[in-house]
Length: 198
Image 1 (tube, rainbow, N blue to C red):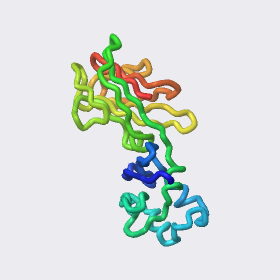
Image 2 (image 1 turned 180 degrees about the vertical axis):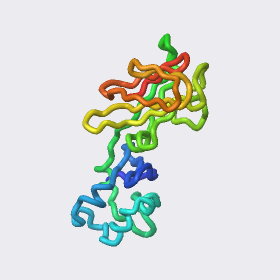
Image 3 (image 1 turned 45 degrees about the vertical axis):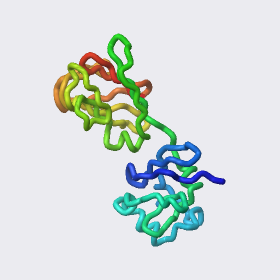
Image 4 (image 1 turned 90 degrees about the vertical axis):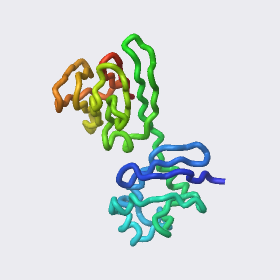
């Protein structure tokens, strides 16, 4: 029997975070199905439903239909679990927080690219951050990191408050932004610790 979807939630336009019954999980971008593919490749997707789903606010109303184990919008179930399974990217963002002497304080495995990088990864001592680092010298909203650069990917680091070092650059000026090539993990020095993002 094919795997069915156990959990689903919209994390970005046309992208759903999925967990399957066989343990597979990740982000499924259905954008190609809605904009690029011939409708014959998705036989249950009607032209009217396709147009409706092309509106991000409509797409975001996705829910899991537990009876069929697939995605649903109202009464429509336009994507078979096998198509969604095939579209899943298992990429995850790994974060390690350690002291400068190497003691690991926390290890996190965050969602995929769209889930984490679209809104940006925030680091600080406040509980509303993506990565919470409650250590001396770490401001409530210390730094925000996004990914950019197109063919030359880089981390875009923005100082929100507090002193930050990344890629050999140190700043304590709120709003200062710099780019660090994404060829290797990003190392952020905040207070008495290092946050490694890869």
